[in-house]
Image 1 (cartoon, rainbow, N blue to C red):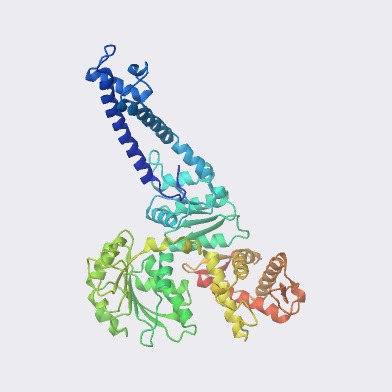
Image 2: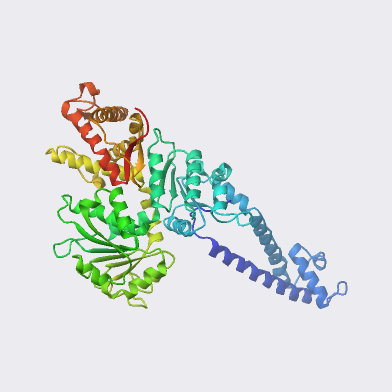
Length: 577
């Protein structure tokens, strides 16, 4: 069942202090009662005052009375203290027992009535890390975990989270986001789909998928829907997010006027994600591809992986000179110079899934130590806390960090950033759509002074960002009009090349969508653009549209295969238009 922590200040220390105070009060009341009863009864012959009698009467003080006190006072001061303190301790104990007895029901009621909170489903490292990050950011969190009494592991979470009553019990109708983070991708997909069905806008649902290719396939199927459901659904991969954050924080830079030399050890999911992300970012720095990055990929199946990645992301061949080296590190220092890759490399990424192997490689491969501060990145998960032992930005460590060259990178911690996870596929495609538009318009001589849309994404106004997002979300509907669909660029397959009649048809559909959206927002036609007054020359039916404005729509459609390829997708034909 859901367990909640809705982001209030921690109350456990306060409650512990209160319990301790009442425990001390109970001891004091008992001692005072015993001594006071001894003083009161020592001169009385009606009641016995042996130690056992005094003990019995003293216990009765805690249940609101004792026979020796029925006749009234005066009583010794200590007994007066005890006859008030003892019932107070009893009353607190009753209240605490009721609180514990009804805690589960109270928590369920609070979860059901929560508003604007976040639901995290899962028991593993990702779920725990994400929950801590959300709470540290002041977010209200409800967790759905395994019921260890009846089921355990991802299956227990899946059965709970797919149950509509559990989702409603967690307050899904008023939640802001749902994260499915078990250790099983199929379970997460099932939870994400169930949450998307039972949730409603503006709920965002994010399902973790550990296999990058499966993640792409699920994203393609969801983006390919002709009509998106009310809740926003996306699938994320931890290695992909961590690579994106790593290259954002520490981008590749030129070294002495040349491209940096890069070595990637391990063609794991993280290693492949790092390769693709660094190529994407270098492409922005060098859009004409005049300075390709020399990149050595070292793995038992490096040649095969390099071919797969180049097929999946065609821009890699224009940005990187990938040098696949099948095998390990045994003769790497001799092999690299022979193929025109001088040592030492400028950046090294050790990406093995086996954390001990990754750390051992980093600490023993002396030939890779000379790239400068932070030049050797080691992928870690559960051993990421070793960062503190090596310093790594946490002060003075107890182990040498190779003069700052060694950087231990916690992949899960880096990826479990709610803002990073929220940057979903639609958002990324919207950015690429905008970037392609800016390049196209500047190629035609337009400048930001005449077109306010020609600015970086970060400076773009929210209405224009929203317009790009709506265009990205509509890709699936338009492709279905042609009898086409999205497919991940995985394995062999025939990509459908858009023909001129199809480009014309998609351009018309896009203009009609944009026209309806702008008119709904209060824009009107005018020969000259005026954003302040919401006037635009393209706000007319396609038949009346100027030729240059039609061509803008044609160009946007022609860029569509490039935009999709950047994200790892291709257009395939699945039926007749």
